[in-house]
Length: 148
Image (cartoon, rainbow, N blue to C red; front, side, top):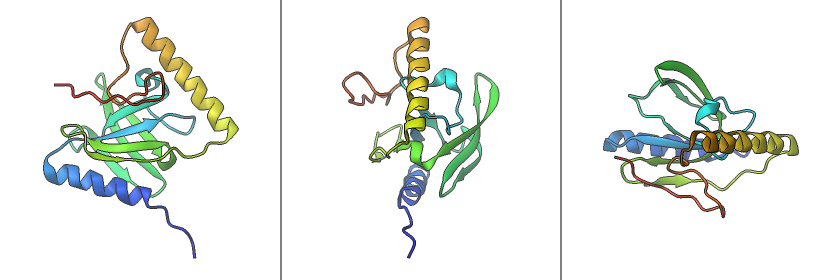
């Protein structure tokens, strides 16, 4: 019998709980070569995306990939996030949600991820900005911060 992964079901459940509770669902993503997100917003190889109804169009929470359109600086962009890249899903307002253990990567995917991390770090340094809430910080610990 085929082993069906639980991760997509948990993501859909937390998304629905956020929506039913009036919370904003955020998706934390580890960016690699298979992930289509705005690279200029990637920090330390990760990005946190608002996937709420008001922030997205044509959201599809599939079994293998999450796809949607979102606006960044007024420009519509197509997003595609493989399930393997999802770190977690949580409510912005309460920080409650679910986080997943890291999935193993091939050496080619790891090299792409390292390059994305370097690009994000270089960009943050040149722009003088701090990492977004939920981004990895030195030492491997995650820091979450409520922004009002």
